[in-house]
Length: 102
Image 1 (cartoon, rainbow, N blue to C red):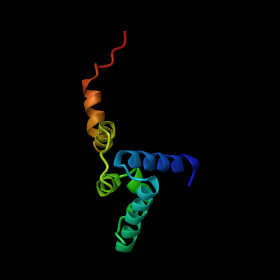
Image 2 (spheres, helix red, strand yellow):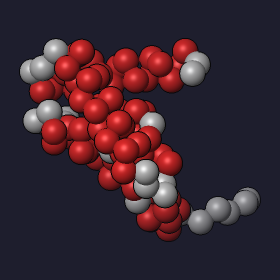
Image 3 (cartoon, rainbow, N blue to C red):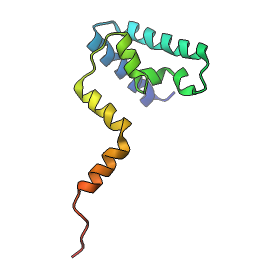
């Protein structure tokens, strides 16, 4: 794992801990527990057996719910944009004026 990934995970743990009122080590332990549980269930989708899925990926909502974290509105909006990136792109390109050369 490279430095940038570790740093993103660390910042995610800090933010989740701050917004949930729990200690950082407790948040990290919950993420590890979710990953371990997914490993035991041996799903076909390997993304769920990576702790990063619960810290910065699709599983973050589940982790936040588990630790009773109230995500910032900015984070919620960004997550929505990431999930609906195609619609955002096409709406943005449809609303821009057409290119004209003089």
